[in-house]
Amino acid sequence: MQTVRWGILGAAKFAREHMGPAIHAARGAQLVALGTGSPEKAQAFEAFAPDLRVHDSYEAVLADDAVDAVYIPLPNHLHIEWARKALEAGKHVLVEKPVAMAADQIDPLIALRDSTGLVCAEAYMIAHHPQWQRVRQLIAEGAIGDLRHVDGIFTYNNPDRTNVRFDASLGGGGIPDIGVYTIGSTRLATGQEPVEITYADIDFENGVDVTARYAARFDGFTAHWVNAMNVHLTQSMTFLGTEGRINVSAPFNAGSYGEARIEITQADGNMRVERWPEVKQYVLQVEAFGRSVRDGAAYPWTLEDARGTQTVIDAVYAKAAAG
Image (cartoon, rainbow, N blue to C red; front, side, top):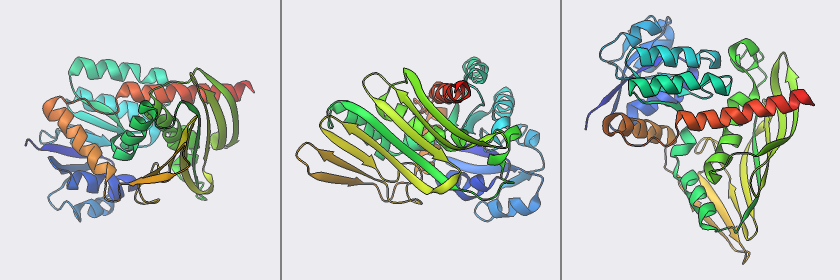
């Protein structure tokens, strides 16, 4: 198996705690380079990747001939810029969500991906988790009859107002941070796009959304989503059909928030539970990316998929602005 050699742009906490270890643990992947101006932050990566080359700039990582692919966990407003630079440097790119701040910003990146022939995708890890593949299968098979409504909640309480998520200039906001999950998982599970955003009630603080309640109409069903950065940590997705219900109890941070499981209740009233306690979705994400790089395998979450979610986000903000 050809090993995909990875570099990371920036020593972000998420990269240190999740994606760096996932790259290190994934089959067919090797973490070889990190770009950071902080030797202290680099030490945490070197603890699990002792042969890591630490560069003092992102440009140096892109110039490193031993790097095949880069992971970009930078603040949201930098995603497009550095994904473009990485593709232009001949690197495959896995960029954190959201890819961009507006849907039309993704179009030039799609064009560059296509012209270079390189793999470039959004790091949307839940698309790789078997619990979501199973939800999509159950809905498509009619296990709960005709889908009529989706309820999605993803909230957390972050009191640190110096965090980048509270900085509008850095692409902050609750919907870009976690709305991608409630919106995106609905699209992933159903294969459908909203027909209309019917409601958007958003509380803003210093130019970023801190609490958002919004709704959409799809072809045949409705959806209501709640995202907040100032509410107790809660994750839940529920799919209500004419003949049953599917509840995903740890839909986004499976493992850390709770056990990966779905509860299926059908017309007879009985509930059955399916569990995936050992699945590591970040590792699966890296391995899927590697198959795309090595073999040209279809990647489960494309830039077009990311653009679809961003289109919904753009429409939610527009609906809220229109009152």
